[in-house]
Each structure stands twice: as C-alpha cells, then as structure tokens.
Length: 389
Ligand SMILES: NC(=[NH2+])NCCC[C@H](N)C(=O)O
Image 1 (tube, protein in one colour):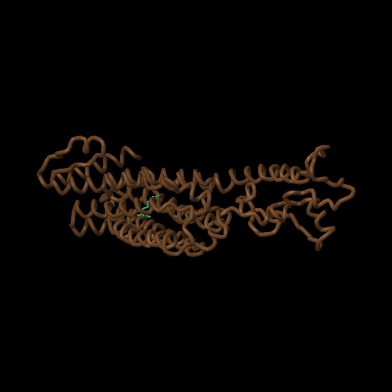
Image 2: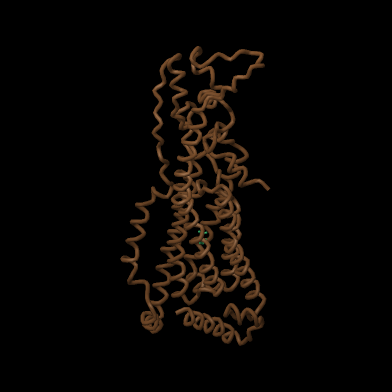
C-alpha cells in the first residue's frame, strides 16, 4: 500500500515537472522524499514542508519530558491528544487518497501520529500504572509513618539529666510526643509524599490514624478522625464516553477506508477518489480544530498551566505555519488549493488556537499567579522541578 502510494506521488510530482518541461533538480529530494523540485518555488515549498516535518517531529518531546519529570500528566488534556490521534488517522487515510497531497505532508503525518501515540501511552502509564503503583507504595509508606509516630520520642532516662522527665505513668501521654500529628499539619514543610494525597489542613489529610492523636483527645476535644483515603480518579478515566464515540467511528467510516482493491477502483474514477480524500480531510480538520477546546477549557478550569509545556504549542504553531507555506508555495492554482482546503483551513485555525493557548500560558504563569498553587493544592514543587533549567 505504502509503495503504491509513493509510486503514485512520484508519478504526480514527475508529471507536474514533465508538464512544465523541467527536470527534477534536487536529486536527494527526489530519491528520499519522492518529490520532484523543478524550480525555486518548489524548493522553498519543500523547505517549508521540511521545517514543518522537523517541528512536528520534536513538538511533543517537551511535553513528554515534562510528564516524565513530574511523573504526571495533569497539565495536558488527554481529550485533546485523543483528538490528535483520531485526526491523525483521518489525516493519514486522507493523505493516501488525495493525489494533491505533497510527500512531505505524508511523512509529517506518519511522524506526528507516532509521537502522539507515544505521548498518549505515556499519559496512560502515569495516570494508571505509575500512580496506582505509587499509591500502593504510599499506603505502605503511610503505615511506616504511622508506626514511627506511634513510638514516643522520649529520650532514654539518664541519671545525669538536668531536667527530670516524669515517668509515663505519672504524666499525660501527649507530653512525650515532641511533634504531634497536629503540629505536623501546621508545619509548612510538606509531609512525606503529601503530594500524592488530597490536601487538607487537618491531620486526617495526612493519613495519620494515630493513637497518639487519640491520646490528645483524652485531654482536648475529641477528634473523630476519619482516615478513609479518597482515591483520586485518573484524569483519563473521565474519557470513557469519548472512547465509546471513537470506537463507533470505524463502523461509520468503514466504507471510506479502502484497501488496494478500492484504490484501483477509485483511480478509475478520479473524482470519487478525491471526494473520499476530501471527506476524510474535512473530518480530520473538524477533529483537529475541536481538539484544542478541551485543552483551552482545562487551562481555564484549573486557572493554571502547571504541567503544560508551552513549547509543544510553539512548535505546533511553527509547524502549521510552514505547512501552509509549503502548500501555497507549491501552487496557487485554485484546483490544488481547493484540494488541500481541509488541511489549509485546519492549519490556519490551529495556528490561531495555539496562539491563544500560548497567551493563556503567559497569562496564567506570569500575569495571574494561580492562588491554588500558592496554597499548595497543586504539586508545585514537582512542576518547578520539571520546568527549571
Ligand atoms: N498528532 C499531531 N501532532 N497531529 C498534527 C495535528 C495537525 C493539526 N494541524 C493540529 O495542529 O492540530
């Protein structure tokens, strides 16, 4: 299928140069990209396409690194990335079917589909496996903390002690706890692994189900401490409906996804061929353009851009601009532009939306400091660690 497609593209490209009565001047482009450049405009078009390809190749790496450092994916909307995956599938299929597609367009599509899948897998890993594992480790760590806190810190009674320490039986037990759970809760130092638990200002939030506290209770007002730990629901768990919708898509689009036999048939009916590519192109554009909304909404909802790497959007912006440039430079013939319309419109709209997300980033990060982060509701330390350098 791929060989066939490359052959088709080479034929298209060569046919165009033959039409113009010009040879392909850049041999390696012809060899590796199956593209025939026969004038300076073509060369610029290819150059832009190549920059777009490189930008897409690296665009998701900053976010992958941020997720890796924070061991979390809380800054990026999974729905947005799933939109990319679905759009990429339409895009790839559309590219294969649309004869006006440039070879760099196709390579770019293959490349970003691969990087997006890596990013989605990483998010699923952190949302499910890593955090589940951390939580179970946390539970045992919590037990250790509880045990440690149960042990009185009373120093061994020595004969030369200047200050007599009363024996346990003669004193209220709470006197022996140099640092009670309550004082820990009041401490500005985050408790051990506290970032993995719901934060509240009372001891129960730290998972300290301690008899030492009940010792306090014998003296002070009783504290009915509930230590049931609400397990945070992974971000991705909320997307079941989305998965359900997406999983229904192949049934609706099956007729559009043609194999070799279908292609042959389509090639005999040129307009039908293009119509299928166009149809997929428009579906792709709708999914890509709509995909930015969950990310924009997530930023607004959180009032923060923590965990989001802006470079992903900076690279996407450059990639989309150069992508448009590569198409427009190749040909301003209306038939070519019309054929590439879904890709062009999508790229232009995504540039606008990415610009908006970058502005959101600047606003939340530098203009309006997030109050929820200053009171420690978000894992600020980890985020800073992720963004230092
Ligand atoms: N997985 C990807 N990076 N896909 C590329 C998406 C391209 C599309 N124009 C957008 O910016 O949304």
